[in-house]
Amino acid sequence: MARILLLIAAVIVGFMLLGTVIGFIAGILKWALIIGVVVLAYMAFSRILRSRHSE
Image (cartoon, rainbow, N blue to C red; front, side, top):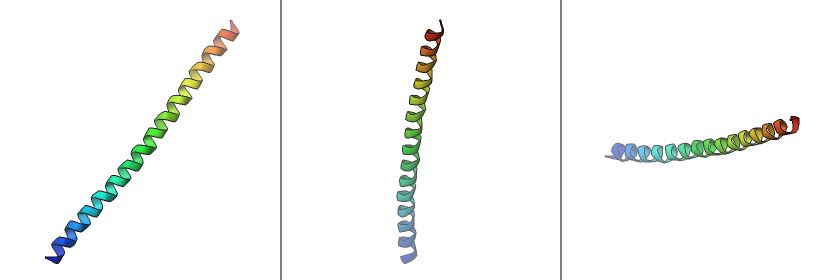
Protein backbone atom coordinates (compact mmCIF):
# COMPACT_ATOMS: atom_id res chain seq x y z
CA MET A 1 0.00 0.00 0.00
CA ALA A 2 2.83 2.39 0.86
CA ARG A 3 4.50 1.80 -2.50
CA ILE A 4 1.30 2.63 -4.34
CA LEU A 5 0.90 5.90 -2.42
CA LEU A 6 4.57 6.72 -3.02
CA LEU A 7 4.15 6.06 -6.74
CA ILE A 8 1.03 8.24 -6.90
CA ALA A 9 2.86 11.04 -5.05
CA ALA A 10 5.82 10.74 -7.44
CA VAL A 11 3.50 10.96 -10.47
CA ILE A 12 1.76 14.05 -9.06
CA VAL A 13 5.11 15.75 -8.33
CA GLY A 14 6.30 14.82 -11.84
CA PHE A 15 3.26 16.43 -13.43
CA MET A 16 3.74 19.56 -11.32
CA LEU A 17 7.39 19.85 -12.40
CA LEU A 18 6.46 19.16 -16.01
CA GLY A 19 3.88 21.96 -15.90
CA THR A 20 6.46 24.36 -14.50
CA VAL A 21 9.01 23.45 -17.17
CA ILE A 22 6.46 23.76 -19.98
CA GLY A 23 5.33 27.13 -18.62
CA PHE A 24 8.93 28.34 -18.49
CA ILE A 25 9.60 27.22 -22.07
CA ALA A 26 6.37 28.87 -23.26
CA GLY A 27 7.41 32.11 -21.55
CA ILE A 28 10.81 32.04 -23.25
CA LEU A 29 9.20 31.39 -26.64
CA LYS A 30 6.75 34.24 -26.09
CA TRP A 31 9.54 36.70 -25.37
CA ALA A 32 11.60 35.41 -28.30
CA LEU A 33 8.64 36.00 -30.62
CA ILE A 34 8.05 39.50 -29.24
CA ILE A 35 11.72 40.44 -29.67
CA GLY A 36 11.73 38.95 -33.17
CA VAL A 37 8.69 40.97 -34.22
CA VAL A 38 10.25 44.16 -32.86
CA VAL A 39 13.51 43.49 -34.71
CA LEU A 40 11.70 42.72 -37.97
CA ALA A 41 9.58 45.87 -37.66
CA TYR A 42 12.72 47.95 -37.02
CA MET A 43 14.47 46.44 -40.04
CA ALA A 44 11.48 47.04 -42.32
CA PHE A 45 11.07 50.63 -41.06
CA SER A 46 14.76 51.43 -41.54
CA ARG A 47 14.70 49.89 -45.03
CA ILE A 48 11.69 52.06 -45.97
CA LEU A 49 13.40 55.18 -44.66
CA ARG A 50 16.62 54.31 -46.48
CA SER A 51 14.83 53.75 -49.78
CA ARG A 52 12.98 57.06 -49.49
CA HIS A 53 16.18 58.89 -48.64
CA SER A 54 18.05 57.53 -51.67
CA GLU A 55 15.41 58.62 -54.20
